[in-house]
Image 1: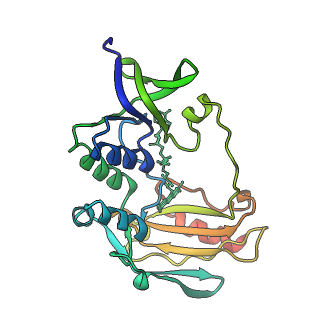
Image 2: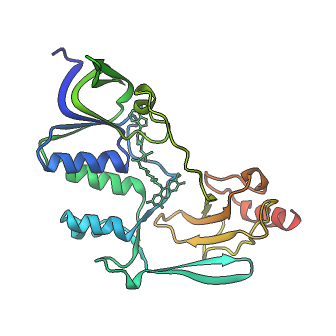
Length: 268
Ligand SMILES: Cc1cc2nc3c(=O)[nH]c(=O)nc-3n(C[C@H](O)[C@H](O)[C@H](O)COP(=O)(O)OP(=O)(O)OC[C@H]3O[C@@H](n4cnc5c(N)ncnc54)[C@H](O)[C@@H]3O)c2cc1C
């Protein structure tokens, strides 16, 4: 075995929720596992923050719930939506047969850092950040490992099992020649942050944009666990997102953006 080579029972490509949770579960049972994550951290700011009651129940079953809920989070027990001019309550979690009858709001990177911290308590667990899986190794007609690029150079991982948890553009899936099944998506979700610098005191009211594809769009006002921004989500039955022109998603909203957005919506 050369310095750029390791051998494990299981190699997981991708340190997202799937890869990190699988790594934790395998390491708990004593399976030597190596998770390869191409990024240097878990910061995926465009991702949502909701940890659902079913996920919290898994944390309970793993004996991690108490510690998990000590992490900074908010608890959402009901959800509402603005549909046209009406505000309706669309979800009430208080009747669920789970230990947590709420959605916990926590940035995904906090969730992943927590899972990583728990997994690292097990000697069977290894996590390599900045390890970009580039190909599978095949020997004797079977997958026998993976190759990755790291800042230190190439890494060859020999493994009995390679798991592709590397997201929607999976390198592992492509290397294995596996085809995707497109299940379609029933709706488009437009997800944005509004800076609290320009909307300091409260979530600003915002008219629902009209699109060519539908008469109205559901609008969710989500609390955000981040101190610097509000969160707003527009959902609509699938139609071309190109019809949403008044604003750009992502990034901090510069001062004045909200006013420009509202005025262009009224005009549009
Ligand atoms: C805008 C948005 C909002 C969302 N909001 C929520 C929410 O509020 N609540 C919720 O539960 N879910 C939410 N989701 C869904 C949730 O983010 C996904 O279901 C979840 O992240 C999928 O986890 P995963 O581990 O399968 O894949 P991913 O999270 O995509 O993780 C894949 C990981 O693999 C890494 N990777 C990719 N290629 C390689 C490679 N070649 N080598 C090594 N590593 C690689 C990536 O860097 C990434 O860390 C949201 C998704 C989006 C896009």
